[in-house]
Length: 159
Image (cartoon, rainbow, N blue to C red; front, side, top):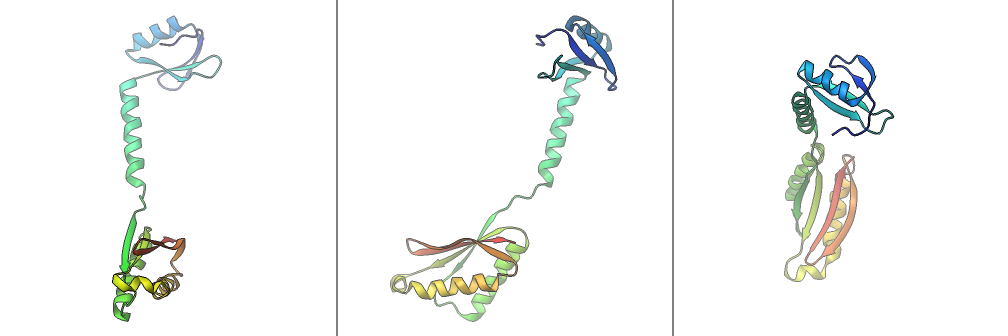
C-alpha cells in the first residue's frame, strides 16, 4: 500500500535503518516476520516502521480503553421544587443538589406550577433565587430561570 519510494525505515527496536527503496524495506520486514507500517505519510521521504501491526493495534486499543476509564462524564441531575415549598423540604432538596454539584455534575432545578399557581410566577422565581443563593459557594448559574410551559427551569454548574 506504500506508493512512494524511497522511504525512511525505522527498525523494530527504534533504530534508524536509513533511506531505502520500498522493496528492500518490505523484504527486511518479511525476513524478521513483521509488518511494514507507514507512520508518517506526509514527511519527505515518508517514514515507515518495521513492527507487529496486530500488537500495535491491540496496544492502541488498550490505551484508548484506559483513557476512557479515567474520564469523568458530567451528568445532568434534576431537583424539582414547587412554589409553596416548606423550609425542611427546601433544605432537603438543596442538600441533594449540593451533593450533585460536589460530585461534579450539573443540576437542573425545576419549578413545577400546578393549576392556578401559574398566575404567581414571582413566588417560584423567588424560590429559585433562594436555591441559587444557598448553592452560590459550590455552584454557579449556567442558564438563568426561564419558563417552559408550566415549568420554570434553571441550570447550575459546579464552580
